[in-house]
Amino acid sequence: MANNALTLELKGEVEDLLNAYVQCIDDDNLESWPDFFTEECLYQVIPRENHEVGLPTAVMWCDSRGMLQDRITALRHANIYQVQWYRHIISNPVITTEDGDTFNVQSNYAVFKTCNDGESTVYNIGRYVDVIVRDNGVLKFKERTAIYDTHRITTLMVIPV
Image (cartoon, rainbow, N blue to C red; front, side, top):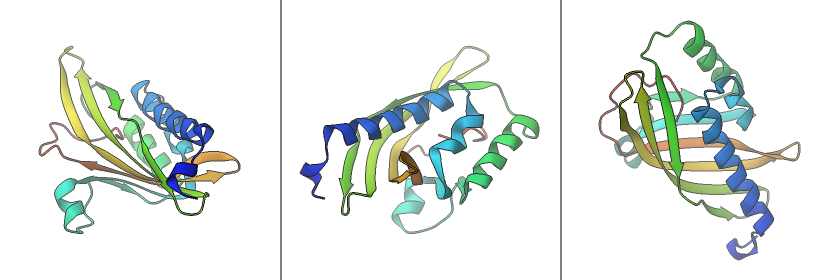
């Protein structure tokens, strides 16, 4: 399927997935976050420098929906961290496909963080590189890589971006 053959309906579905994903995080509905992924998936948050030279070291890495669920369980019950809220801004996605079943999507993101003192700061900026597939008729992430440009993460990254 050529890029120009992507339908407006499909583009809308992809945008709905991306928007629902960040809304889930921003609304602290993190128990639903793994539902955006296929059972066998890859989620990673990796510095741009590591990505560009092929180093696999990521600050967050999960290779199954079970690992995503474990991350949220740890976040809720084991990790101790400063109270913080995220707000995402994402760009319009660029969508390509070779076969009409797997969609390669790239979009830019900015995450702002507000802590319990009320101060808001830029937390993380980068791009999402996604592989999206249809799972039982619903678009889901097969792979989601957040490649961040930010050189310094100011706090422990416990909440997914």
